[in-house]
Image 1: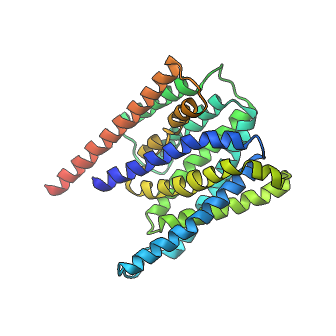
Image 2: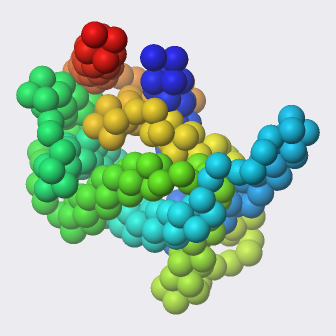
Image 3: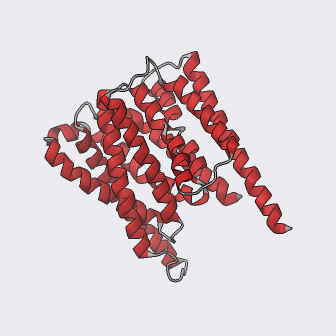
Length: 306
């Protein structure tokens, strides 16, 4: 129970960091292209984790820890796979935002909370009926919060939607490797360098990066790299160790709520009654899903005790 609560808190912090980073990410796009921005912040996220890994190793040796319980082979494989998927998802999303509105992009990206359980069905994973209800409530909340004009399918919408599919795949890949005795922090570091190098290649192929422009976007890159990449994605990997994929996606879907709230606090944007009600629906869906997960776990524990 404590581990499950710990995992939920980590994922909640992840969504909070991602939501507040939306302001920095939007500002950074005023100076550089999507591949340049993503490459800089993603590589920075990997660099930031190097001293963290060294600190963990030092503390482990100091505490007299024995041989590592993690598989280096699985950790490296997981990092590379997660990094490749993250590269595709982030690139599609960032490119799509250029051609669509922020409201549409937020809603379309949020569809990954539905895509995860749908993919899970093909992986022979059972989904409780009430969880589908909670997802439907969350989607209704996203609609009220994010959609600001008539919904139509544009090239930008399609890019963001395909990106959402890969974000769902990213969550499932993380869940897969978390079950294979991997080091979460090291895997996160490897995924950033993998994704960052792929983005760096695309940056030089499709864009013309200018040092002065990168410096102008430096503040937003630092925040997005250290917090959104280095901290949040690591919290995602560690938090998913104790949380099932569907509940994890619901918790991380709060990113849009925190993005709206940070826009209100930092950019003086106002929430309409409709948008506020959308936030309420999303929070309600997450809380109900959390309680349902707790009840199921308690039932399983009681069954084991009998």
